[in-house]
Picture 1 (cartoon, rainbow, N blue to C red):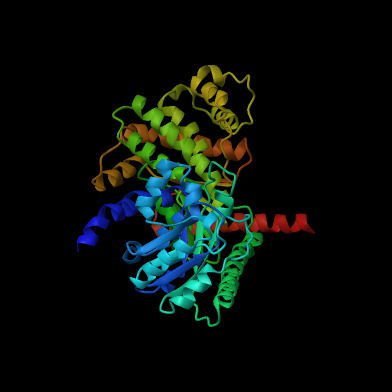
Picture 2: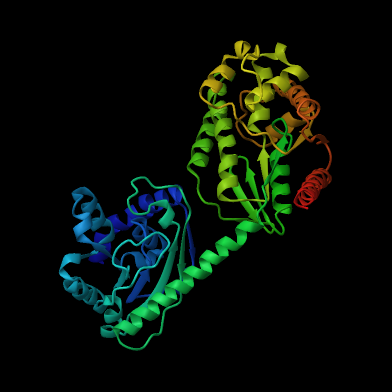
Amino acid sequence: MATRLRNLPRLLLHLLVLRPLLHLIFGLSVRGQANLPERGPFILAANHNSHLDILMLCAALPVRLLGSTHVVAARDYFSRFPRLFAVIDYLLRPVWVDRGTGGKAALEKMGELLDRGENIIIFPEGTRGEAGKLARFHSGVGRLVVTHPEAQLVPAFLLGSERALPRNTALPLLLWHHVNIGPPQSISGDGGDITQALRESIIDLGSSRTAARHRRRPERRRGLTIAVLGIDGSGKSTLSRRLCAELSVGGGTCLIGDSLDLYSDGEPRAAQPLVKEKLRRWMSAQAKDAKSLARYKIPKLAELLLRDALLGEAKRWYGPDLIFMDGSPLLNMTAWSVLYRPQQLSVDFCARAMSILAGRGSVRDPLYAEFPELRHLRRLGLTRLKLPDLILFLDVDPAVAIERIMSRGERVQVHETEEKLGRLREAYLLTVRAAREKLDLPAHVIEGGREPDVITAEARGLVTALRAERVTASEEVSR
């Protein structure tokens, strides 16, 4: 009991600080966690390409094993950074190896821990190797198994850290990390035989994981972006989610709405955490709490810019076949200008504003003078917003929308009045018309007062028709 109480602050730091940060910044996908023994002793051995490897393996452990597991780390490297050494020493309770002395003392310490029923995380390569290549294994792990046959030997393969933080790199890239844990190995022979068999097991784990990743890539086409527009209370969020789930059968889809969600074969699936998504949701909350339109504008603009950036991130990291946007940053900005400059609204204005926001308009357009915000965005390089491949506007009477909003029992936002929603509805209709007539984008108005199943069927048909059209065009180009 006393030992558990002493370990409690350290475990809480792992669970409440370290793991959430790792998942937020890098993400973590673990396969084969069920292969870990219920209790020790065991030796978890993995390939080694990055300092992130230690943290990812510890984060992959179930909580029940975290307190009884020690990593093996190089004292000669980490001792050069006293503060980092102290943090690692406290959080991970390593077995420190002095690589210049041959590691005999470290092997003895590992043996003592195994004798007590505790566990070891070890990197048989001894140091970080060349990215993506498995170096020769040192035989110490084999000798440990020979002298401690009660300790189960568990292989693991790490993928992602070799690109996120390889040797001689100071700043990490935000890449999702994969930990593939194999079943415990039953290996006989001397230390050399066991070490070689372990290396082959890790190579097999790596081959299967890497092959699976690379098999999927050639099948991916450029994901189509579908923007579902509508005033608040129109049901656009519900329609976006239904389309995303239904059209994910046989592929993968992504929804960028109040949250960022992935679907595959009709079911939600795990998504790599993205820093921009966390920040966007915070900005969205600030906009919803605004007490006036003037205070609403800045956080809403920031949220829309982050949402546009997320569209690029989703295409890069997830590679979905379809991306559904609950709203569209470029189109929303165009239509929302009606709340601040209602006298400007026209089809021509909407087309010019969209062209400028998409980086296509003239730098001498008078709209820059009329809307200083556009000029600031251009100076910051933020007038490169993405146009969707298909626009669906769910048209609902503002009075009906207000009834739906009030029925939610949630706090009403500053713009959620029948008068303001009526102006927004007119602006969206003109924006859709401008997109279709001036920018040659497929844009459709869907009557939103009908049954949800009828609305979804019509929208699904429009998306399916666009997909078929793009596939046909692609096949003709490739002939």
